[in-house]
Image 1 (spheres, rainbow, N blue to C red):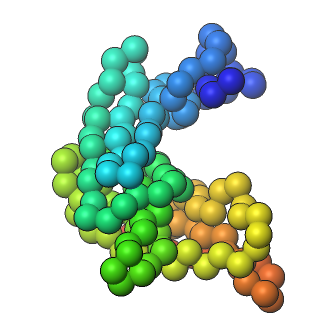
Image 2 (tube, rainbow, N blue to C red):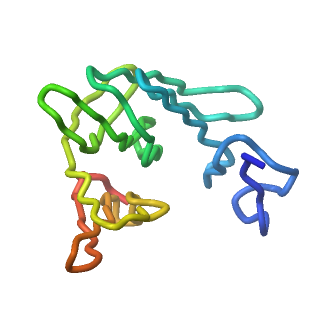
Image 3 (cartoon, one colour):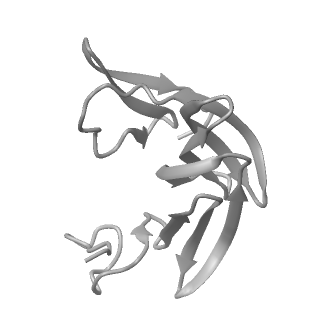
Length: 149
């Protein structure tokens, strides 16, 4: 089943599976990505609100992270691939309304044959954390996004 299922009802009443990720604001976050764009939105009371579509000039791979921010926007981490010059990296996007306010590139930093299930996480301190692998082992990299928790 490709759905979110509540386990204890603390974030929302357990009323069955949902397509969106439950948020503490009694909303759900829905996100999807294609090679051309990322679509994000919140579901509130059965209606889609704060929906946005982001396109970039490179081919997109996986959507590694989509998180709402404290300002009604989103933090997005998406894998991008460019053929000329050849690059394989992640882009971190600060999306507000219909605009990308800022972005920065993050090296994919992958060595292990089996990548971790989740390379990126937002911390309670408002920072972005990346799990990287190398021949020396695992490393967690912190990016200060200037967010207030």
